[in-house]
Every structure is written in structure tokens, then in C-alpha cells.
Image 1: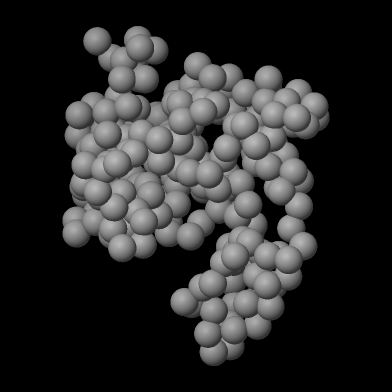
Image 2 (image 1 turned 180 degrees about the vertical axis):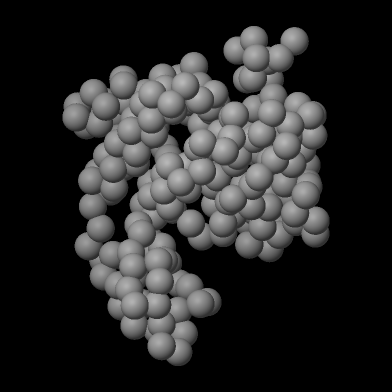
Length: 214
């Protein structure tokens, strides 16, 4: 079996001394699956959707570890990039420094409800895409997609009901942050080896309860 994982820095293994200690590798080892981890630090959800669409035919099982709903993707003559409210990038320097103006604008004028709604749409679309292609999949949130913040919005609640929690680890309340609570963190806030083991264990147990393994 071939497993594909997509996500942001928490799935990539940012701040680990060995990237093969990240949860995708731990999970794949336990399942005895071949693993391709295409997570990237700082990436957003649109990038993950594109990666899944481009690679779905080559894998038997795909796990999407969604990033924060506020991350937005843009492109310019230098390539594709993500930014979000409050974003200060160490890479937006030299010819790229003008991108900081976009980050400043988004910080001042973003609309949380709209961005959260787009996050839900991405989930629903990719969920249906997996089903259409008869692919085994799971989803999980990395951080920040707070269920309680948006309860009062009827439109958002309507779309939430379209999401199948059977294939969504921790939905709607638990993200990787809850799973790794009080585990050691790196200087930039990423959970380390213990946290990655917890995430791998949580996903493994979800898979077991689905009956995909004995």
C-alpha cells in the first residue's frame, strides 16, 4: 500500500532533528505502508488540494492534514506563495519584499467568516473527489480551526453538516494541538518527537476503528 500525506510544517516535521520522526513516517512504519510525505512548511489548504488532485492516481491512501483556515495562496512572477493575517515571512526579502504589503493588507482587512467558509468548501470538495475516485482517505486539522468560534453562523453550520466525520480524525473539536497538549515543543512552537508519536497513534486508532486493519 502506498500512503500520501499532505500538510503544513506540523506534518512536514519542522524543528525535528530527523524528519523521518514526523508522524507520517511513524504511521506508515506501523502500517507497513510505503510513504510519500509532500507536506511543506507554511503551506495553505489550496496547495494541499492541488497536490492531492495531481497525485491521487499514484496512491492507495491519502491523509490531508489541513492547515489554519486563514492561510491564503497567491502567485506572482516569482511563483506561488502563502500568506495570512499577522504573517511576517523571513523569505519576503529582496525582490520579494513587496509581498509584505499584501500580508499587511490581509492583516488589516481579512474576513474570518469568509476564509473559514472557504476552508469548509475545500474539505467538502476534496471529500467528494476522494469518493468519486474510490480512494481511501482521512483528514485531520493541524491547528486553529476552532469549532466554537463559528457556531452562530447558520450558513457555516449548514456546510459543516456536509462533512463526514467518519473519515475526519478529531472532527470537529480536536486538532493536532489538542492531541499533543503539554508535549515538548520547539522554539517556534512545533511539537517534537513525543507529539508526532501521539498524532501517529491517534490516526492509527482511527484507522483501526474503521476496520481497515485488524
